[in-house]
Length: 154
Image 1 (cartoon, one colour):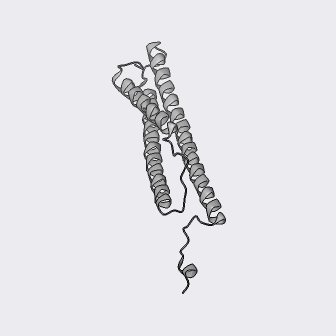
Image 2 (image 1 turned 30 degrees about the vertical axis):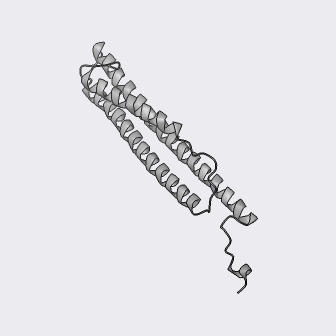
Image 3 (image 1 turned 90 degrees about the vertical axis):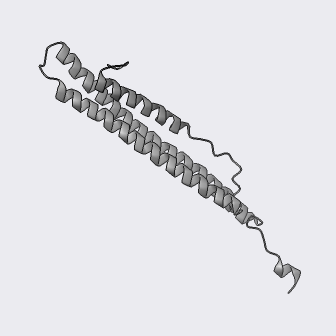
């Protein structure tokens, strides 16, 4: 056998392979952005639940203080339930997003190590995840304030 036949090409030696690797890298970035958009949808949903629950709770508190209704417990409990559901939905979204991004980064690194992918562009942390965590903290503080009637939302 000649030396030419024994030469093994690296995965990114040809132009078409290089273009494919670059497209795959862009696909990873698009997938990361899609995961961020999904988390933003979860944030939007949970924020609606949190704000509706807080508003309902406060309306029934004000109605009872104005002596327009005798019992406000059912309305306040419904509002608290919405706040708690919103916090749980947000927590589930955060956990799913973190798991998905971990798996995506792991797969990207495996492909880069195998030489299938360049992975030159950075894969930054998600600022959407930071906002979701802050909102979850606010939701928890709101729920505690509603339950124990202490804090800024009492």
